[in-house]
Image 1 (spheres, rainbow, N blue to C red):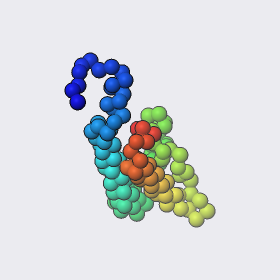
Image 2 (image 1 turned 90 degrees about the horizontal axis):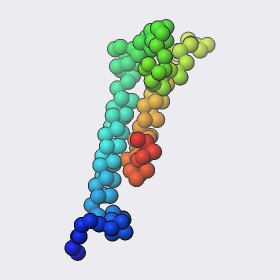
Image 3 (image 1 turned 135 degrees about the vertical axis):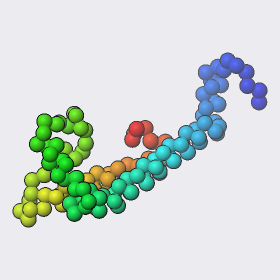
Image 4 (image 1 turned 45 degrees about the horizontal axis):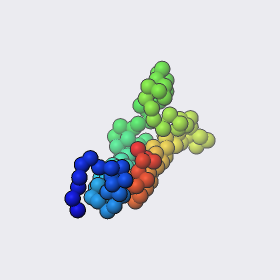
Length: 127
C-alpha cells in the first residue's frame, strides 16, 4: 500500500490502530522497564535485613530517628517511612516495626511493578 503524505485523520487512526509495530514496541518497552523495577524491588527486599535492618551493618532506623528529631519534614524528604511508628511497643520492638514498614514498602513496590509487567497497557496507572 502506498503511503501518501499528509495523512488524513481517518487514515492516521486506522494506521495506528492496526497491527503496526508501534504499539507492540511500546508494550515491549513498558514490560521491560517494569521488569527492571521488579528486579530492583526484589533485590532491595532481600538485601535490606542484612544491610540496613535492625541487626544490619548500618541500621536505617537510627538515621530516621535523627531525621525525626531534626526540622526535616515530609516535603523536604518525601518517603512512606514518615508514616512508620518509631515508638516501641510493649515488647520494645520498635526497630522490628520499622523493618516491617520498610519491607512492606518494598513488597508494595514489587506488587506494583509486577502488575505493570503483567499489564503494560495499564502502565500509565503507575507512571
